Image 1 (cartoon, helix red, strand yellow):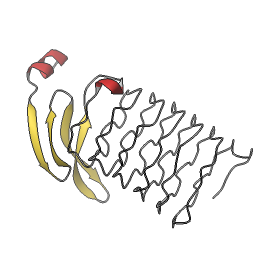
Image 2 (cartoon, one colour):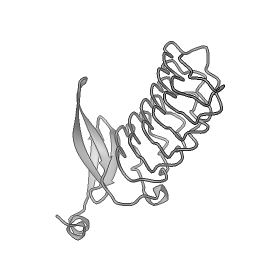
Image 3 (cartoon, one colour):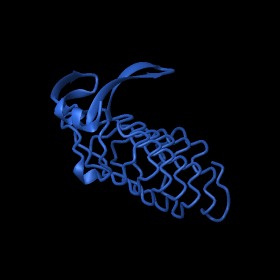
Image 4 (cartoon, one colour):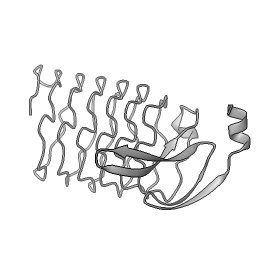
Length: 196
């Protein structure tokens, strides 16, 4: 099917289930099953060609946008609806993404959200509702600054692992239960390889 056929055959679909309650258009989004070691679950993935996030509209009412933009050519993030609570793997392997998204106020988890976003310079400010951010910036080799860290964060293992350009160490709250390898490979922090 070519691009023109895809646009002509596009339709609005109403969804009510695991990902929330919303309407999406099949020209830009596709509902898929994601198979992982933890089981199978639904994901809504972006299938459009737009790379400027200002021109991409994520459906209002969606609560989980895990894997939505994984491995796409997106350069700037779209606005994230306030209904979103889970953003695990959302922008994973988006090699051209250069800045983090504005995170919604009810967000709870953003684990692996920006993993391997090698062009990203500035990360996102986490709302204080976030409890899980493990491997959030892992492999973001250009990351200079990551923004505010949730005061309620509990899981931060590998959060900044291999962020070779990270210059500013964020404040890690006392609530963190897991933080192994949080700064491993962050060579620019104090000029040494941070192992914890």
